[in-house]
Length: 210
Ligand SMILES: Nc1nc2c(ncn2[C@@H]2O[C@H](COP(=O)(O)OP(=O)(O)O)[C@@H](O)[C@H]2O)c(=O)[nH]1
Ligand SMILES: [Mg+2]
Image 1 (cartoon, rainbow, N blue to C red):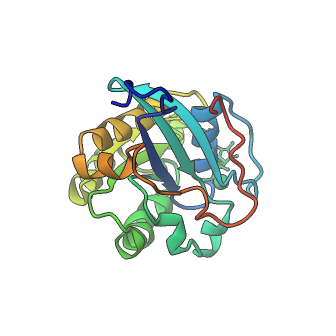
Image 2: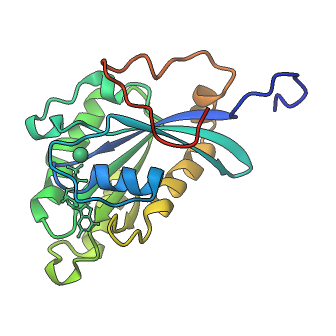
């Protein structure tokens, strides 16, 4: 849209996305898989804060700032600043651990209602670890029903085998692009600073950008 200007913006939209869900469900692994295409057996204390990834989707250049917890979810102490200004939220559970699924409605959906500043914010429910099919404890139908009830998108995926990982992020972002109020917030012309809101020791080291 600003292509007539001499200094071209590096992106059309900047979106803030969040990963939430219980400890151990694979939030950090999904983020690493999506941003770096790697999978490591992460120690439970390692979180990545946030990563930045540039993508082109729907004909737009997008800068995605994807926030992850640094393990605070174990103590249920995510703060409102974590949620503030997000256009998209990825709610992750582990298909082999039923309590991670029930906690999404008992704990995490409530937190979103409490803290999310944006009522149009798009949510994506993700059932991770489908590579462990023999240990499955939550059926796909249950995921579909939850998503319908909470008005979320839904996919099952595996950070380990990479099945559906890109699709989780892409479907979420395409839906954000379809929502005019969210695009307006994320527009490159809008002065907002989602990077300085975060606490110290930001690690924006990922990727390709800038
Ligand atoms: N089998 C399998 N293991 C996974 C998958 N995703 C993550 N893990 C493992 O689950 C554990 C917790 O992952 P992590 O990303 O740290 O979860 P987080 O606490 O939600 O950030 C780690 O040992 C990961 O290697 C997956 O898709 N399949
Ligand atoms: Mg983590």
